[in-house]
Image (cartoon, rainbow, N blue to C red; front, side, top):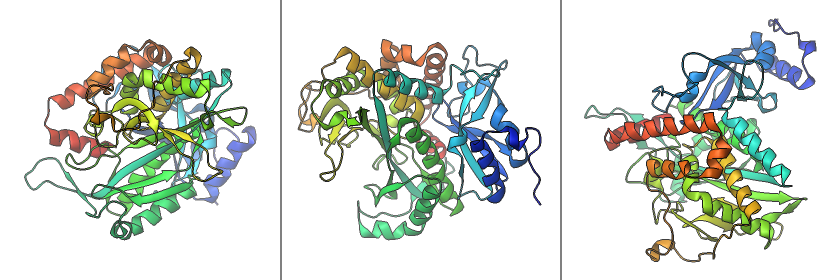
Length: 453
């Protein structure tokens, strides 16, 4: 018979927590990962053993405050209140418990970073999104969202010349081509089954434009769940590949001369059970106007890495211009036509990728859109051409991480929303990444991004 959890008694827990303990025992789970995303966009965490899970559901796991000052190269930055002194807790959300099919014997929960007394910590990214959702609710709105990620599948091999490892794509098939379906079939089926086991409903799949490039999208969900889903998606895409002796990367541009990997953000805004984007309204125009107004600053959060800006270029369908337009795939904000008579329209934010922390990214988008609604910002005239064909007419988004960070620092709305501790840490971490990669060659940048994301 398996050992029962010690410490906190099962009958002292709420019914939801008790069900988690029962599931963990029945499913043979030995380790439960408490996951969070840091300011470098890296998914990190610690794991509790099943024997201590009852306690850890209440107390969380102790964690140094310094980890939110770590950049994606594991270089600790000098951020006030994020040094060797100080403690937070990684506190899991029981509602997010899922087994990890790609890691038999393991499960995961998405987590908040809280102070030892249980109160929210000013640098917790998941709390930032929760607060943004609450602000939106005060104005009578809810947001439904979905990330549309792309990734490159292949094998990580040593460089014959002795440089960083290189990614060799799984195939060289054409975009949407049948050969691409066949080559990646075994991996794709395992991935879909793993995602569905975790409650992530798969919508569409196809081989994309670049060698080894895949696109598999998950059904929309309320904003917090959508960000949680994207964390699980990233972990599962990479985990399934590793178990199959392959390598998957969601890095924005893992191969310098090939198509980049986006994670376009799809949004619908709801009020009194009505989709605000379904017709002309001041709220719709204001939300789009807010996105357009804040886009230069938003890119520092939605395109969160140096590598992002290799992808965010004109004529790459990445949305490199701060314009909007119906079904315009070169506009940063696209109003998508509904599928069928019963479908609902949604907005697509194209300058977005998986190197971003999804909680910061989506939370910032909410704050930008809400600012537009409150101030009735004009989105401007919809653009129905490729904006790059009209030189000088439309504003170009930042072309580097440093440029985007400058825009973020100048954006009073987003800086206020981030709060003093979070904005200080984020800017410091991201500035350090920009400096670190500027001092190295392109191969160093590509390798470290395909390794981490």
